[in-house]
Image (cartoon, rainbow, N blue to C red; front, top):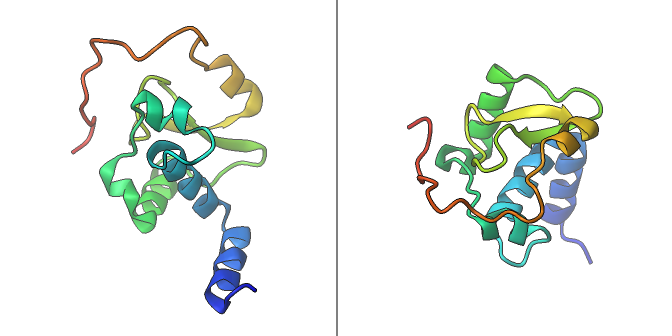
Length: 118
């Protein structure tokens, strides 16, 4: 049986799609048991440290790229890059298909791990 907190959380997520986007981003990058982890966290893709806090993530998104347009999801501009300021945008499914890493590639050996914004 679902607890009151679980039910409240489910209602919040249904009313707030950005929260679901944030949670999915964190799961793909940080939870080895999550679906898709091998393509994100398993490839070294990280989430900007300040975005581990939902309110910080939400504030940055609304101030910099705005609310999610219909039919769009969060996309990394540079697919070798992390989820961080300056490397995310709202994109349609067709835009995202054109912005993919080739299936045969692996993590670049010379990629420097740093955050664009500190």
